[in-house]
Image (cartoon, rainbow, N blue to C red; front, side, top):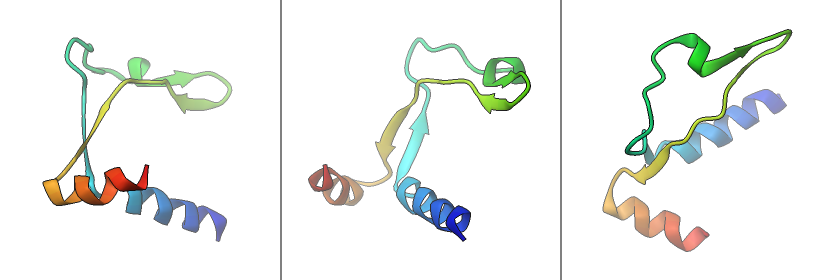
Length: 65
């Protein structure tokens, strides 16, 4: 149940944003750039910009900071 609640929290937070690659950042073209393939496989850190989808969203999100 905790896994499902975490998923709902993440999805309900991300729905209001567009994720974009910052200028000058190289694209992540292959899986070796995106994941660490060791004993445990996990995503590598990456930079991205969170941009509110609409002006109305920025009015809702910004005051919550």
